[in-house]
Length: 141
Image (cartoon, rainbow, N blue to C red; front, top):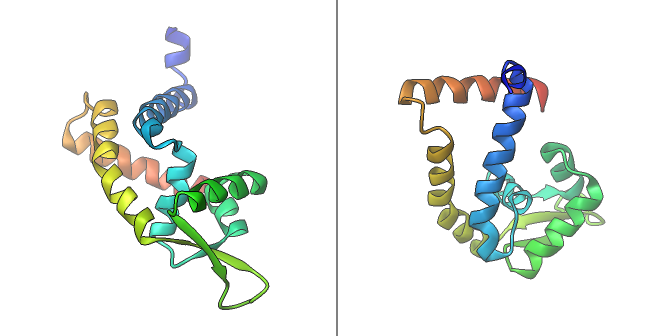
């Protein structure tokens, strides 16, 4: 195991898996998964997005986005509306119900973060967050 723990990429992968498992366990009651949450969280900071924009921004396959948006629309968390720029296109918009769900999950997100980052003091957490943000902005777009 020591060899794997010397590999930063592997450690990031394992931490990502653990984070996903913890968050999915919390979301299980709602029937949603972390991928649904990511769509909702993205839409919370956007006035609406084309499905292809969601796909590009989140790094999900376009066909996966269709299914995720379908699931969220059935729950009333998002709506598809005509795009103001192109009436042939539809944008996905967060509904009030979806926003409420996100606010209700904020506490769970904080609990997951606290469990994962428990061994770090506040300054270390801030440093880690800054570094991860830089990596995500440079490498993930």
